[in-house]
Image 1 (cartoon, helix red, strand yellow):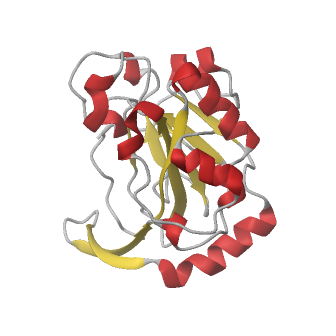
Image 2 (cartoon, rainbow, N blue to C red; image 1 turned 60 degrees about the horizontal axis):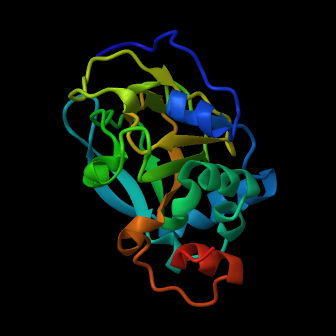
Length: 236
């Protein structure tokens, strides 16, 4: 497995050309300290256990919860955060966008890295290569470090017309809790090995081109703020 490389980090930006050039951007402190504390406390009863692969070849008990739009209103303001909506508007331009599903994923102590992958694989033929069908927002609820299994990203890999290379050089997204990394739908990424004794949780959600409206959030939700309801329905 390749080690962490020196191929660079991204400065915080919602500039479309820069995002499309690098394939990702990191936004420090996107989630407030108050909301971060609420999220950590509230998510515990939501999470469902499943068996994940451990770094020693066995299994480890990890936790996950999808469909958060139907579970809680806690993150509504994040889905409508001006920085994220500005980036979505710039990326999808005239096409418009919808909010996809939201989830929380925990990477357990001793949990192994996933395979390098891209999120746009299902819709890859729908758009030109540098015009993503989706962007994925990952917000750290715990420290993202090399030891806790922080996200590995391969900058500019969304521009490559070749098979995913599991041994390629990557950047480790070191982030403090509350910070976010936004990923181009075709950029290669994965979680790293969690070699620590600490859990590593993240909130994730997507914005997708409005052309994929039927593939957006399948959650049936009542009582959304009007602006968020319009984003979910693709009429924002």
